Image 1 (spheres, one colour):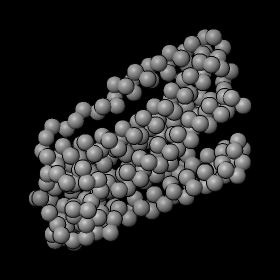
Image 2 (cartoon, each protein chain N blue to C red):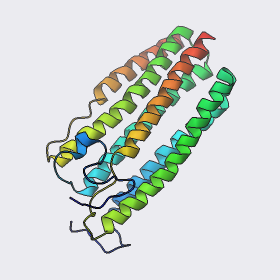
Image 3 (spheres, rainbow over the protein chains, first blue to last red):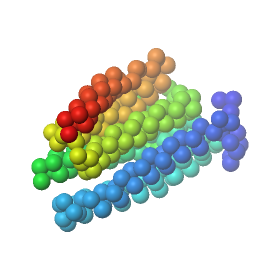
Length: 119
Length: 130
């Protein structure tokens, strides 16, 4: 890596970690806004069950914002460390969690659409 | 290969998913980060498709009810499929990067375009038959 810098420096003049962190944040924000809309809509149709469902989604998506920030800090630390861990970007756990959350949200939306049409 | 355990990254050899990290070598981190951003863009696409389907059904708009429902269901199903494919695509691209192989084509692009074409036709008909 020709871009290795000392601790606390910039990893990449193209700001790759920063752009990735921002992409995580906008995605988590979209998910949070969606779950807040769900918080408004789901209890109306499904009562307490809808409230629990939307509440879980809202908490999970807010937690995702925190986890994304933490991931960015870790990425920055690893990429600017001149140690053996240099270059090891955090693994696929958070992407997997996000994909799972999105599949769940879309599945709930599918059930909701059919439900609204049937009622 | 590093030998330092990281809390969120997982210790080497125990990084998730094994199907990705069990093969090849560490690629340039910038490629990994670009792959991550592509994954996130697909996730946002899936969320937009889902929101579109819900909005179409929720707003009603005085369209032909059966055709409107068909378009809405297709949109949210596309949302489910796109988010699942986003993860699969991320793993396949990361594997290809680690093995220095050509990157896989975006598998969901053509099916998604086809579904959206059908959705568009449904909505046009729903407007005409309203």
